[in-house]
Image (cartoon, rainbow, N blue to C red; front, top):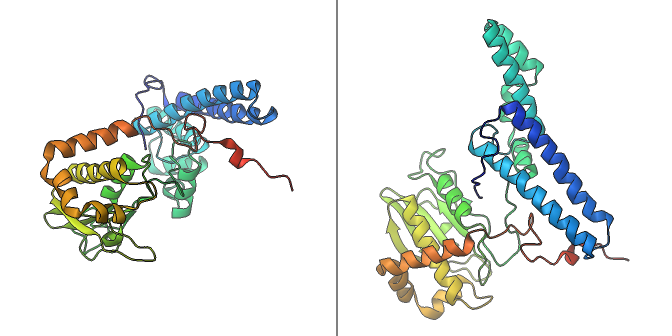
Length: 320
């Protein structure tokens, strides 16, 4: 997940922003569709693809900006946002006119389709919104890269939880989702030592304890299960990101292609890893900074295939 420095909507009302997003969405869809009308890899195709990518970038910037400034809810489709903005404007006008009774407001909310159910929605509806939102990163399902960070429900929902594992998992995934590596990398965060997220068999496992977090590395849950090895105990979320990121960057720099972390650590030794990541504070910070530098502006291969160097021929239909 990324953020934007855009200020396009700074002085606009929600309705004006909704209208802008609707126009951008139409242009964004039309631009991508136009690339299908010409032969692949020709000069005209490249020109149309570049134009579509530029329109797409502006659309995504505005989508992210509206979430960051609180106008649009995360995962809320443009159409729903436009309806809500219009409904809220009508309610505001009615409030100014003195029509403030709860019955009046509820009736107008119902007319606009704004109910607690449509605001919150079922888990399936929320998931559909997020998946259909162009500002939601696709991530990597099969690449030699970070997979989804697995978590338990943590202290926010579980009576046994000692730490907020869902928040920690989201922070790790947002910080690392663009990361390529010698092989696939799996992370997990458990809110307590009961370890419901199976952090003990992941490349990086984080377990919540009363004093903070314990970090384990080089686990594997495949055909030959390997229990992860203890790396360090830390107190804060920022430390988890720094230590985990430093270990992963060390693995990225020294691991062989197709070598999982379990085999990398077996080759170099856990003591060597601890010296580089735990005992050497300046070296650890340097590793973490190099990882952040490498991930900065790393393109999403699904939304920016040209910039990511994706060979689009893999998506062409085969003639049978």
